[in-house]
Every structure is written in C-alpha cells, then in structure tokens.
Length: 512
Ligand SMILES: Cc1cc2nc3c(=O)[nH]c(=O)nc-3n(C[C@H](O)[C@H](O)[C@H](O)COP(=O)(O)OP(=O)(O)OC[C@H]3O[C@@H](n4cnc5c(N)ncnc54)[C@H](O)[C@@H]3O)c2cc1C
Image (cartoon, rainbow, N blue to C red; front, side):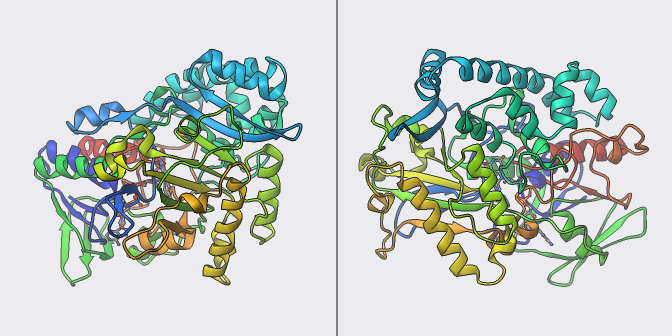
C-alpha cells in the first residue's frame, strides 16, 4: 500500500492500515509530514510554536483519537466569540460565552432586547441536534440523500440548509446585521460565496462548521496543530508504517487492478492500492489526465507574536476574554456582502473581513516559559474574501495592501495600535507573517490556495448514484479502481478531521 502525501489524513489512513497488518509506505513531498496541520517556530530566536496554517479542531472524531491510541487532546475555549461594534457612537461588542446569563446580557446590551438572543439560542439548539445526527454518519458508509434526510428527521431544517441558500434562513431568523454576520461567517471560512449563492457552497461550508464533534464546538489543539500531526506520525510508525519525507511522487499509473508510483529520484513502486492524500488536481497531474475544474482559495492567513494583548475600546470587555474566542472584525452581514462584491469584481475589499484568536490564552504551553513570564501571546488571523485571483497581477503589493487594510479594521476597535504590541524577532523584525492563497498553493500544493482542496460537498450520495464498490460506498473512489482519495478532496473531506483518511482505510480493508 502506497500513500501519496503525508498530510494528517494520509497519516490517519497509514495508522489504520498498518494496525490492520498491511504494509504501508507514505511518500511526502515536503521535508516534514502534516501538510496544512503543522506547528512552526516562525520567528527567529523566539520560542513560540505557532500553528502555521490550520489552528482549531472541531471535525476530528474522538473515535479516531481512541482507535489510533493518539497522545493528543483538545481544550474547550471559555469564550466562543467576541465581535466589537460601535452603537450610538459608543464602542461595545457581542460576547458569546462565559455562561448563558452573560451571553444574554451581551445580546441585550447590543440589540436592546432579548429577541436576538432567543433566536440565537433556538437556532443553535437546532444546529446542535443536526450535529448529533449528522456527525456520526461521517465515519460510516456514505448515506444517500434520502437516508440522510430521514436521519435528520426535521424537514424544515433539511429544506433550509440543504435546499435553499443560507441567507434566507439567516434573514428569516435574525434581525440585527451584526448578529446575522456572525452566523454567516461559518458559511464563508475557506469558501468564496455570498449568503444567497445559488450553488449553496456557503450552506455546505456552514454545515461542516456546525456539526463537528456532534456539538459544532471549535476547540484548541493542545500543543498546537503540530501536536496532532506528531501523534499521528508516531502512531503510524509504531504500527509499522514507513514514512518517507522529501520524496515527491512524480507520476502515477494503473492497469485497472494495481497501480505504480514513480518518485522524484526515478524509482517506481508497485502496489495493489494507492491512496492519494494530495489534492485532486495533483492526482490528475500525476496520472497525466485533464485537470479538474479549477479551485480557488479566498483567505489571508496571518500569524503574529505579541508582547502583550492590545486593550479594547469596548471597556466592558477584558481583552483576555475577547481574544480567547473567535474575534470577528468587519464581519457584519452587510460588510460581508460588500467585501464579496468588491472581490468578485476583482478589487481587494476596502474593509476586509477577518477573524482572530489567541491560542496561548487557552494553551500557554506553545510558548517557552520565558515568553509566558513576559506576557507574550500568539495571535492568529484568518481573513475572508481575498480570492487568489486578486493576487495574480502584483502578488506582494496586493498582499501588503490587504494586510494593512485588514489590520486597520482591527485597530478601529483597539485602544492602542496592534503594531505597538508586535514582538520583534532576533533580527529586529516585527513578528508577523502572512500567507496568501497563492503562497498556500506554492508551499502546500493547495489548488489555488483552496484550504479544502476543492469545494466541500454535502455528506451524502445522490439518491440515484450507484455505489458498487467499497471505495464508492465510503466516498473515496476515483475513476480508477486501484487508486482512492484519502485527503480533503474526498467526499466528507476538508478541515482537520482525519475522516477521509479513516474512510479510505475502511474501504481498503473492506476490499480484503
Ligand atoms: C490557512 C489555513 C487555515 C486553516 N484552518 C483550519 C482550522 O482551523 N481548522 C480546520 O479544521 N481546518 C483548517 N484548515 C483546513 C485544513 O487544514 C485542511 O483541509 C486539512 O489540513 C487537509 O488535510 P489533508 O491531509 O487532507 O491534506 P494536506 O494537509 O493538504 O496534505 C496533503 C499532503 O500531500 C503532500 N503532497 C502533495 N503532492 C504530493 C506529491 N506529488 N508527492 C508527495 N506528497 C505530495 C503535500 O505536501 C501535503 O503534505 C485550514 C487550512 C489552511 C490552509
């Protein structure tokens, strides 16, 4: 068994298959495993291990952690989100967390009544029930659409989320623009769409953001994302898998029954099955087939190290609470629409939406003891609506302009500029690094910088689809019987979940 790519999903597949007694060889192009789930000491001379790309965990089933005996854990955040705002000329904000009473009070202070809080509570009670019903199916053979609908058992929710654009549900349920925007963001992380996009891309993205773990909670990976990848690599090695890094696969061939990979140093290796953790675009390239429809990422990822957390203009809220949850910036419903329209017309958004979060508030252990003692903190920013196409003409200038515009939106809510809080590395440079979609394509092979390898799909098969093979039933089939997907590009892939890795391994084991 050969696995092309040692991202976290390739490692999950390797762990399961090696534990089942299969001979497993993982070939990874980069000089490290983990793909987009890694930690890095990004700033010279400073002991801060930042999750360079992905940073929060929701979709990883505890079953995978248990089955593979991983030494890995997540920690809940005490605050889910904070959104600064200005109302009647005064700085204020919406805090979700710290208990029901505080959340209700925060909604009331922002919106003037309990209406929005009541709507919020009911809305997320519904998504939680959805999560309890849908999440367990992700590690089972693919249900048909009809079977998934029956499992959800609530036609109104099905219709609103699987058949109509998410914007209709949000506008029907909430009145406040800021509250609507906060809800919509879960449909836009890693997805370039409007609330009313007829493709329903935003609905699929929303679904994956609210069902993780059967709760929809987004938790902090203790030790950072690298801790997960290290635990997975250890588990795969302990079970007998061989992991080779710095080893790109350059071609893939199949006679229909078996497959053969060629590596960068000219070796060919035959196998009964090849699992591909690399994106579908790379699979097509390796096979010499036409590329699939182009994918495009639309996010800006910024990692920072601060000497202190900045103070907020909203004096009711402690920065330690605000930054430990997801801190939404310029993500009002109207602002999200304007930013989308600007970007779709080929212009960088004037007020780029983004969200930030401080890992070290929940898990200080990613910082060296000296940095913790001096009050340093990490800050992770994920910018929305910055599609790859914006960077095509003048990459660096567009990146710099967007970064400045994004930080200006944050600064508008701070009592001191963020730049004053940035640490400096051993060479005196400010501790801030930026990744555009084109950077992610170049570094990780994410097509167009798409963080899910391609647009997410609903987690079910069309009712009329034939599912004749184990690979089809597990949602990992390609056009070639000896080659399966085991990464984010598989059905029910995307995000740090290990699910497509698990499902590809199940398909192979079922094939016997
Ligand atoms: C900036 C950013 C932030 C994100 N934030 C989150 C988050 O907070 N939470 C979350 O759940 N998800 C997040 N995601 C998405 C998530 O990280 C990815 O969807 C997930 O990591 C994909 O994992 P994978 O193992 O399927 O693929 P990848 O991580 O893409 O790994 C694929 C591997 O295949 C290797 N490869 C490619 N071609 C070849 C070849 N020819 N030969 C050998 N090896 C090859 C690559 O080098 C890579 O290591 C984020 C992604 C990004 C980029």
